[in-house]
Amino acid sequence: MQRAQKISVSLDASVLGFIDRYAADHAAKGRSAVVVKALQLLQRSEQESQLSEAYAQSAEQDRQVAADFDNTLSDGLKPDAPAVKATDATW
Image 1: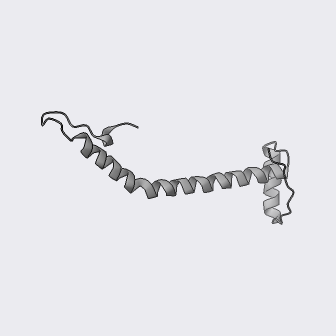
Image 2 (image 1 turned 90 degrees about the horizontal axis):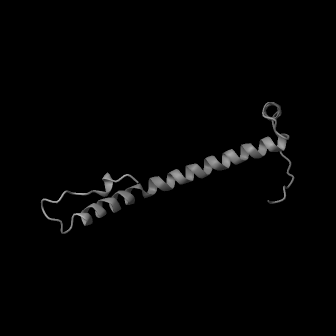
Image 3 (image 1 turned 45 degrees about the vertical axis):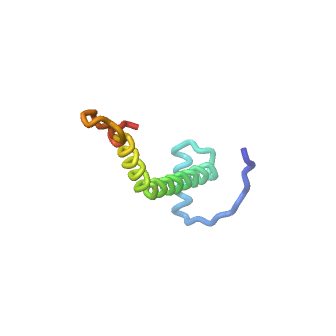
């Protein structure tokens, strides 16, 4: 675990009041613990947004790969053979 570094921040009284109430209500070890938790949640939210964007960007390519796979699966099958589609599979 990395050693914590001390920083200084200026907060409105209402934000500081919220931090103090949250710390008391949730048995936090202090203001720093509340700020760390808030920043970790913010970081997780940012990571989830980036991941969602990456999935959205790859969605069209994924659909094309599935369509190509469907076409490949049907190559050389007898006309009466049942068709199998990759898009029907449960992943």
